[in-house]
Amino acid sequence: MWTKGRTHFMLLGVRHRSFRFILPVPLFVFYDLLWSLNDLVELGTRAFPRQKLPGIIMRSLMNILQELRQIGPWQLMAVSFGDSRISIDFK
Image (cartoon, rainbow, N blue to C red; front, side):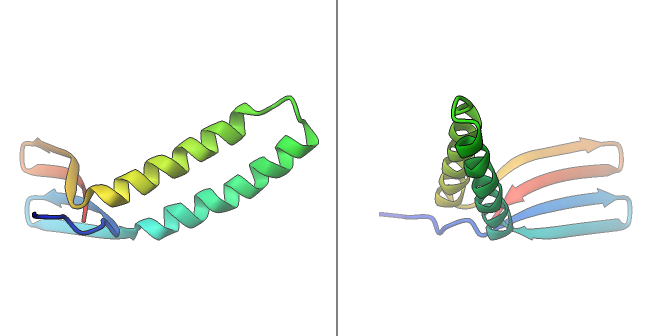
């Protein structure tokens, strides 16, 4: 059975005529950011117990990021217009 590896980077690519730029963004940066925001949301939930929606949203975002990492390499978007191209890939 063929299994894909985990996704570790989001590649933001821009190409215009002879200019080409690719920025690799490690996914663990987003994961660490979500963990930090989750701590702040948890503090807010303890201060205001009726507000449970932010905690639910944060858990959902963290689950989505975990699922994106499990999928393996894939392309989110690729837009071409004239000589230019913008793409977002997960590799």
